[in-house]
Image (cartoon, rainbow, N blue to C red; front, side, top):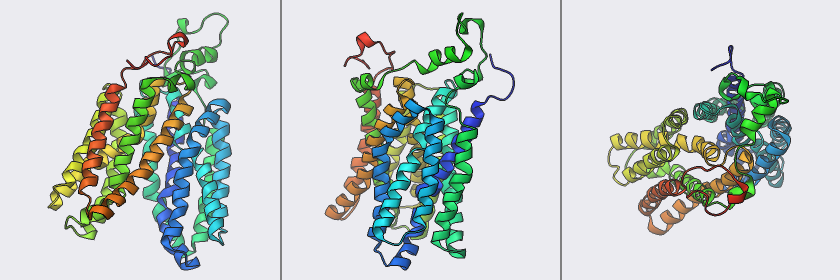
Length: 429
């Protein structure tokens, strides 16, 4: 049964969308727009400028487990509001850049700030507000990542042209302070228990309220206390197989995506076609986020993961035979759609296998492994190209990695309830 009126969880989805819109659009999608202005202002090499984004991505992975832990210990509202303040300040500090070291340090601070308003705390919140509709809720929210890149990048470009790159960073900092801080303080609620509600907007019945317990206390028991503690989860085979899947698939994804334009052009297609293909790939990623969230509510998780990783594997193997524009578009549709599913499936996997007790810490730890995989993929592609003079072996490797990720999700087994006396390496069998 549903409670009458609009379920407050809808506001959680909208709040998450807005925060991810800023997190992605201002955080990393806009970075490439600043490379040339920095080059012109300071005379730095593009490699030196790009190293700031390497610092940003590395710290993102390193800080992920800590943010997950803080979210569980202090609650998402306080953590996200604090990190939103830091993020806005970091953007403003970048606008005062006058040396390369200062630039690196300010981007390090920016990385730390954006982790705290990103998908780890947001997924933790949505996992508590939704059970049956968790996939759809997370999928819709994650579209904010694609929307941020679509809308904020042109805005930054216009500000750079009309004013300067310093003004652009100042505006992004003020946007975070004026939008993200109020949203986290005024809208975000860590769980439905805080409002005496149940997940998915379900109504209470008499059996939900044992004598001497308030609705909020029961909701906490029903939802937040179910799941695996972090240390117990680490001792299971399931954790390591899930981590392996989300190490391999992102490595394969970034290994192809970061080299997609030269891959397509070296197949004999024009740079214009390659650029268009890149844009449509990102657009299909947004559709994939929506679709895989919805699909996950109808199919067993391992089959959804197999579809996601399988589409990417098929698309990569198609690249081996690209000789026409038609095959490029087939690749773009398959790879982009599957690509969007990965970011949605990670929080769903954590909730599916381990519950909510240590959701943030477990997700942060797997996110660290995902970040290592993502960073390594692009490097491996470059090394293979430098050694062999083409990407053939890279495509074979990354297509196979996606197949290995599928196998890992099947070997992970079925989710099990946590029982302290049975928390050993037999979990997941």
